[in-house]
Length: 163
Image 1 (cartoon, rainbow, N blue to C red):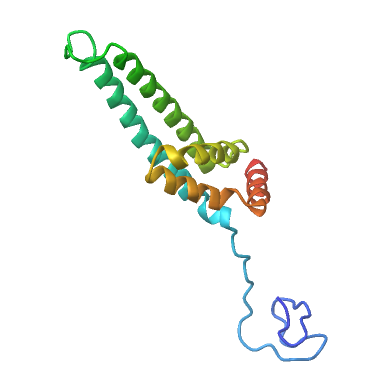
Image 2: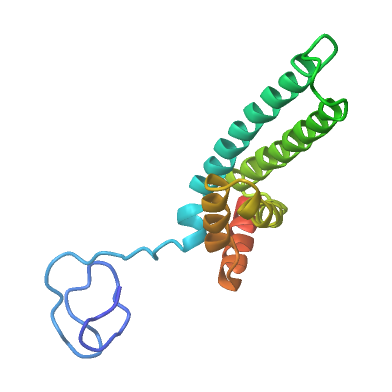
């Protein structure tokens, strides 16, 4: 608490400033520092990574099922032979990416040290791969976690969680 006349530190319950003598009128409130960008947006960012990863998981499972049922043995005779393995590999890659997204979401919500790096790498990857939702989540991730002061704030959050 500070005197609004001279800036001297005040004690709780003090009626007059010890330096300038100005009377303190009304209750004196202690102002809490405003949380930074990372602290305000970290939980929501983790939820977004969970959501986009769930959506990608569903898409990967559906693609894998289509590749191995409709294009598998006994499927349409006109389907090229390379299509089934190609779509199966693409589905597995999508499922792997969504697993990494789940890890990033979990790490961000639990303030793990490695989660910021993983989320930034995935943000760059989904910018152009998963349009428009991935682009929005990627840009939001970079806006929250990429600036230098965000790195310092995130490291501070990680150390306070560990303590």
